Amino acid sequence: MNLQVFNRLSREKEAFQPLVEGQVKMYVCGPTVYDHAHLGHAKTYVAFDVIVRYLRYAGYQVRYVQNITDVGHLLDTGEDRILKKAGALSIEPMAVVETYTRSYFDDMDALGVVRPDISPRASGHVPEQIAMTQSLIKKKHAYVTSSGDVYFDVTSFPEYGKLSGQNLDELIGGMRVEVAKGKRHSADFALWRHAEPEHLMQWDSPWGRGFPGWHIECSAMSARYLGETFDIHGGGLENRFPHNECEIAQSEALNGKPFARYWLLTGSLTVDGVKMSKSLGNFVTIKDALKTYRPEALRLFILSSHYSSPVDYSKAALEAAQSGWERLMGAVRLTRYMLQDAPDGDAAAGFEMVLDEHKTRFMTAMDDDFNAPAALGVLYDLNREVNTLLNSGEAVGRPILDAIEQAYLELGGGILGIIPAEVNETGMDSARQDGLIQILIEMRNEARAHKDFAAADNIRTRLADLGVMLEDRPDGTVYKVQ
Ligand SMILES: [Zn+2]
Image (cartoon, rainbow, N blue to C red):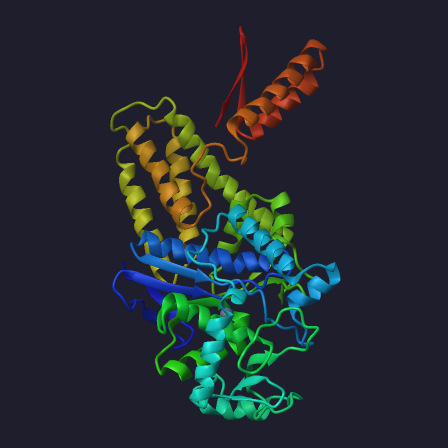
């Protein structure tokens, strides 16, 4: 394995070399849980899911931490997203958090996203954030205002701006002057904010009652679970500034050590070129998308673009992904069908070479900065070869059919998460699926009894289109799923 990653910090493609041989420590900024997740979230977290899957496939032991932001992420208006929602629904803020955290995990499970090893909540790590803020004050990187807010002094960290490629002087000079009382520089950002008595989420601190700033949450939680320096920091490119930039400043100013070594950031999901977001209202929730499209098709759509690039959402793009997935599954189904009574022996054994060659090309693509679209292209190439072989009329032995199925499961299943392991792809248990098909067989028999052959044929054809083949035998109708 010769993995190269594009590091947003150095702006170069670098050989990936983790801090400890064979182990990867990875942190990805998680969602702020105040509403159902949309396809933009799916883009980010499916992308990191494939990165984690590939690292594990390559033999790394990965510790994957992705936080849940349940406090402190403010809107431009200064309102806390979660408190605003709690007010609108007249419920406890923590009930909002609970509802949408569950909803988020339900969506990720449905999309086949492997859960992070640790999903720490910001509100569960306030003592760590206070301790970090205290140390920053002690080291003169932060200051307390008369109103009880604590700000990070960006001028105390000359490298501020290095991730987003901005110059500190320009940042200070270029920003509109903040109205916040007691703030020294316009680019200084809050580590802690004082809370008015009516503010629902607040904690005791050395500076009075208040709540943490959004940026300090990620610095505190990554340090707690991954240490002061760790391997990969991920997130959406849109959070590069100020969020990620502030994380770097806080952590590096405090520890005097590099924070994350490789920064991998994902491009947005766009609609007609504009980022999909809650605030713009141009969003489709994951739940709604899953009513129409299979989760594997949504993944395939997301993976059709490199993780660091944007991907444009349209109905046509999703339809294309769905039919691409059907093409792949057509070959998988045919392989599984032929396996039912395949001859033993080495018929078509030469195809092993074709499998090996495509597997090598697939890994080369993934080694090149997790290039999933190129890897998908290799899978489609393989699919053409497999279809040609299976439809050639030549005998294909069981060992090679097994090897073909394994190749799909390993590359398309294990790494990309788009090929399900089980034959049953409906998400239903097989007894229920069987029951549904039996109902249709009975309806067809009834139609035939009433000499409504058009209706009977229609049921047969439409089932065949879905890969369910009916066969009329003297003792009744049976079916086979291809
Ligand atoms: Zn973060």
